[in-house]
Figure 1 (cartoon, rainbow, N blue to C red):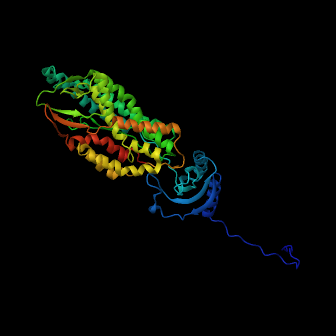
Figure 2: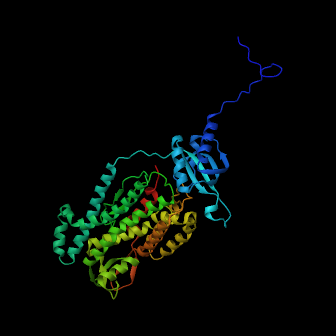
Figure 3: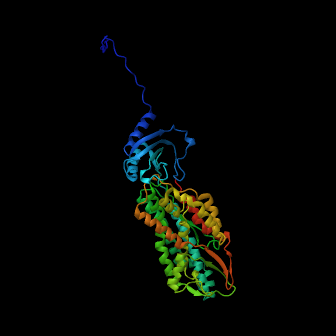
Length: 457
């Protein structure tokens, strides 16, 4: 037995202070505080109690994250937002946590660069597992077959204008004549494929998990004038900042146009300009500014004029090019989850949400011209309100991306078609636009975009 050494003048032992053990929650809070302090001068902090697993809710609409909010820190960043987020994200990776950075509400006259910042820490990082590629291949093969059917029908219709007997003979041979649809099939799939691969490579450049394109076939003859309901990819992680959001959103339409415009010009050079037979019912493709200028450049006059018009279906390339412009215009509508919505949100931030109802009303007015837009209004009314929100909303677009964003929106104006398809009787006023059942397949690319394209899994 050892006596404890006296440590007081009265030769009495000093009573020990026994500290309570630090809980795991307190250790985590200390670690998070230290990590955030490396990038922020913390002025205020708040930690939240964990909630049951079944009560998980999205931290913020548009992030696509089902996770718990662990802590919030308010203060001033010590580095520029992009550098600060990268530094903090590397530290949080070891804890399986993520950061969400926002500019704190401040007086309206406070410059953005001087506003306080908030960092939210949430549990769980998004680490999606690779998906098999064979479903993408099977859907592509099925789509190739369906667009070949449409292309072949276009080829037979063109032949029947000069030799109806031969056209009937070729039609009786069935699938052996599918090769005649290759110009349309290859051109359209090239445009759609370039569009989706533009998204894909932009996402991979920024180290985002993304699926290969899913092509959607439409093999029912007579129901679809396109042979496909479009294509989509799934971005399976939230985007880091507005720069990434812009790159991924704009890359698709711009890549698709690189192929759509030359295909359209080549196709128009192959089309006939004629007057439809009196009383004949034909489908009139709507003019965008770019399409009208293309017809002037190739044919030397504005068409339709004086009863004359371009017979666009007489050239498979022309029809594929026009369809490519239409698909680009639909994707560039600056609302919600559409590519144009990504571009607008990246450019304007939260202010982009104020454009939702004005744009929806504008599309509603266009529905007076074509019931095509009526279906789109219904679609966007339910699915167009959520914007893809980056994790870091403090980092602004750089000057180069701002210019490209404006150019992208100008392209939308150039390729937008007020009335995509209208039926006419020659020498009479236009009939009502094609009915909704016929137009519905053309809406499917947009439906795929809104429902599936940017869905996180």
